[in-house]
Image (cartoon, rainbow, N blue to C red; front, side, top):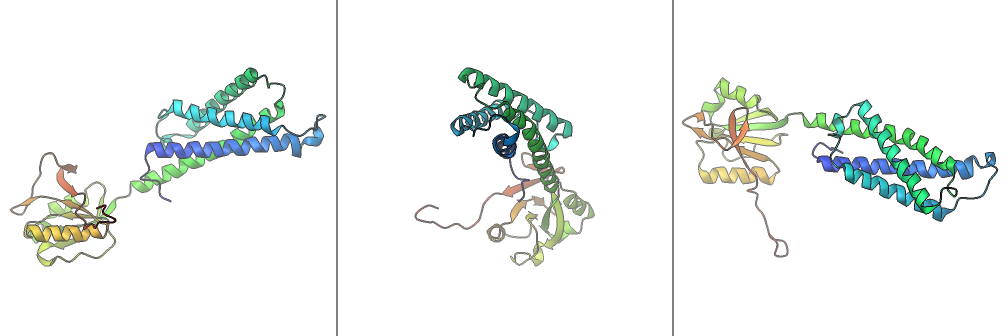
Amino acid sequence: MSLKYYSGKTKKAIQILTDLAALLVSYFLSIALRYYILKPMYPNRDTPSYQLYSAVLFMLVLSYMLMALVRKGKGGRIEDRDGYDVLQNLIKDEFVLMMILFLFLFVTKWTSDVSRSVIGFLVILFFITDLPVRIKVRNVFRWNAKEGEKKEKAIVIAPEAILERPEYMDAFHNMFGFDVVGTYATENLNQNVPDGEYRSVVFCAESMGTEEQKSLFIALQDIGKLVYYMPVVAGELLPATNWLDIQNYKLKRFDDLSVRESVFGVP
């Protein structure tokens, strides 16, 4: 699963969900340790009050969600955090969470009803469980961010006069985000869609008519290609203001010329 197109909010939501999963695992394991696995070691060998511990769990989950909501975008991008940042954030979150827990138990007068061992196990297990989870999530986002830095494959469709100019070919190959894997002369294209594994098309047309260009654009977009138009005048690439900057040259992307149909009256 590629996460390189996910927004920062989506990534933070993923981290919150993984943190909550670690919290749930740690909480249930803490109860299991106190009341089942290590039960013979305690003089009080009664079973846990499930209503009590369910209420405490609900409070913990709600508190963590509120903490995440208050924190919002603080801390920067997840993939930019180093190991110290991850450790520091986890200690802060756990400290605040335990303070809220103690306040909750004090207000509800359940201080003597909840096992101190469960709380102690929870502090230790949540740290042990959530630290590697946070590091793993950060590494996954960091790996996907690096994947996103790879240049996108593209082809160039232009007049032969443009393709024969070394300075223009250097400009095409140096465009940010593009790895030019093929060039095609408009004079020899005959409105056929070029084959190959590429995502984008840089189109520099001078010898093709308007209808021919539109037909080619529609054919390319119908197969999922992104089409960028680059103006050409008298065999020269024409910079234009208010267009998308790509390494000092200008491109205009056609967002959608694909053929569409109506489904139940909705276009």
